Image (cartoon, rainbow over all chains, first blue to last red; front, top):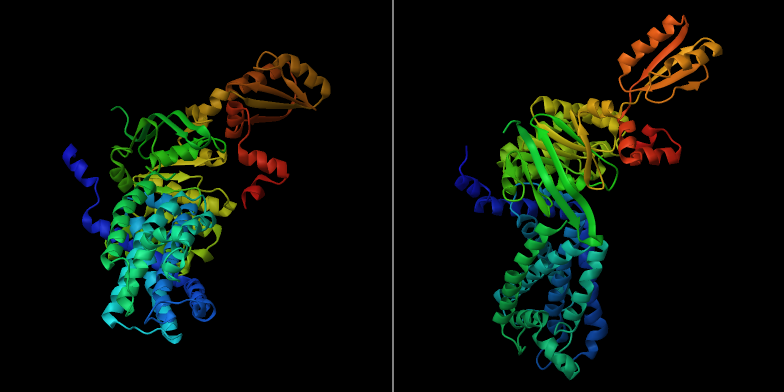
Length: 268
Length: 333
């Protein structure tokens, strides 16, 4: 006969298995991505079109500021925009799992509650790493050059991937709240568009109307873009310091991850 | 406790906020260890909700439930270690192979890598999926998916197995195969709670039956008890001449629970105790020296029970009838 005390103890998942569970789900999600390489390829297609569009069509009309070429200004912005759109994959993926009954199966297993979400956001982070690698090649091909240092560039990549990971937790809540994957995808747009376009990603904020400048300067996407640009491009004078970007990402994870797990537990 | 119960639930209420639908009202069920319990009811009667609550996927608004001796609300992890759930939709990951699907579940039920691999291979063999082990589940047929799904529910050798309409949409051959698997599991001591719309399935597999409609238990017992309570065995006695039949109508009037009906040369009487009434009827006809050309005893089916209890047929029956196709063909899709 078990005593009440042991019963209580064994009703918890140990730290080792909490991590293993998350890695198992990460593995499973990565396998799905690898089995459909077309999806990965075409998810890089749209950001490449954005690079070409801004570099060669709109770019000529935009003044990036003294000592900065527009292509150098643009690339950090497009990188951040791309990983944000990549984070939307979290919403779609979870919504699909929900629709196919996989979440129900997972919820009846003695696994850690956080694993399905942690595994999903981690896999999406890895997918973003691949996308960034492809984008980097394209960026260099269209004339982007690192004017700070290679460690600076790598730190910049790390900062934006961290932000995308934090955003994934928000997307997890969206995915668990949407009735189906199609709607989940639509639900991410009203969030992604204002934050990525009313930001310093594509144009200097000084060129926007004054009522928009306040939001555009301090919203998290801009703060992240500024941080990445500072780390990659010389002569860029950011209105916000790098640590603010890290703080945003950390705060988002601290607030959103528990909310997402709670949503996961209650979703019917 | 007097009985050794694997599943025990009392006073379970569940209302869904959307549309304020009362899915379950005072639901209760008791499943003795090592038996199969059939949970019967039409679509939307609350069967799936009951299974989801008992398998810890959903929380009840009120009431209590013990599964494998643990409280589903307070000791959910303990319950989860001891149960397997195969839901209405084969919940397999389409992009993973058969082996990978089972390996994943093995790892998530906390088997070590090697053990998870071995278990996956064993189950694939047991379910006749070895040839398809390295194919992604997307390429599987409906029956193969169901088998993989059931295999996934068995990875950690659960004491209690919940099967939500396990054979819906399967062809007759696949259904029979799955029934055989369930029977062998029960032989090994597994307790099974299965929901179904197919009375034939409950009749074949279950020792106990609970019928629910509109979230409430409306009947329970063994299949035999439910049929006996209905008391509608029909005895059909065929005579050789019309005059004899008319005479027999008079003789048999006192035996049945309803007035006898004449169908051509056959007199049909509805009785509560088939064998006894049949003896009585034969004796009466013999004494009057009437010659019998045929005798038939029709036991009520669970379909009759269901129709009597709920006032409507099972969805599957109603649907196939309106399509004008045979039952089997209608279910095969």
